[in-house]
Image (cartoon, rainbow, N blue to C red):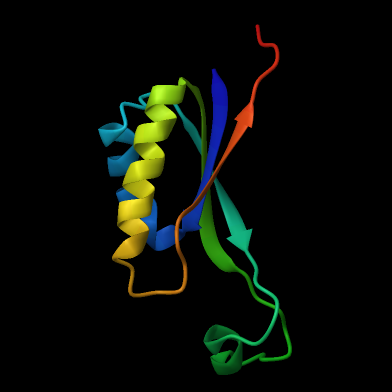
Length: 101
């Protein structure tokens, strides 16, 4: 069993849910987060308060699951990211679990 963590901009929430389903990851949690990038962005430049640093509304999903489901999810995410027209790819990491109850 491992922990998989996936982050993406809010607009991809429905897509992530579909990818989890296709990878047979049925149990997971999610949370709202703010994503930040260093440097100037189009969003910051167009802000009324352009001196303020703003974050992008994002989502984080995580699940304790088996290797085969994670492998399937990574394949699906790689395919999804190949077809993006934005600079906000879905990101994913895997964390090994030494012990659990």
